[in-house]
Length: 319
Image (cartoon, rainbow, N blue to C red; front, side, top):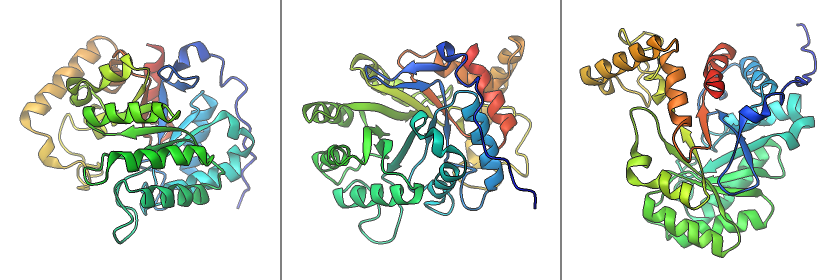
């Protein structure tokens, strides 16, 4: 078996830095307009060599932010293990150029302490995540979802203590309702660990954080915003315009189910596709560019199953 050459990042990776990055709220952090998510295609059941190719291409083109969570895989934890192997094999010399985030909040291990937002779960999770990735700290640690049963102060104090322990440099929250976001913002500021960023789903067919006022609040209070699922798990591409392909995510019956592709939505997607083609773009390019044009958006979080897909998605940066 032929040994792969050691990875040396492209010297040109920051040549277009004026176009690549945005400031995250009122912090000192710059994030790439397109960030790479490890939700799919980086787990233990996926090709490690493909993950290497995708991450090499991303970093060679200025994508410095890799976004993970404790339960990304499958199996749970394996995306972080892939990140650890990538760091060991390829990125150890570039660690200080990378912005690595992870999260805890969804089901991770059996029993009452492996889910939601308790201090016990968050503290155990950050330690497990660091071990899997072989890191002393992550750049950003999120509460992955709002927990209506745990007192907000307990979750937020855990985030504060994780930063004070040197296990994360910044904290964020994901999918918290507006009133809970306001509590988090004040609590964290009062404890000298300001909220860096909010992660929510904003795309051309799902505007909930905009409609709820979350994006406006973040913009007004100096909090960054990163959009996950910007292509609505593939709906905002040409993938489903003529039916459901047998090898598609929807056909496999995971988080994207066939009942979501209603006749009304399909007609809307076809209209959006026609508008994109008239502009000389693809539907995906227009969908990503639309998000980046919303006031207060710092970055869009894209997945990739190939280098070619990531290359196409990055076109929105320079529109």
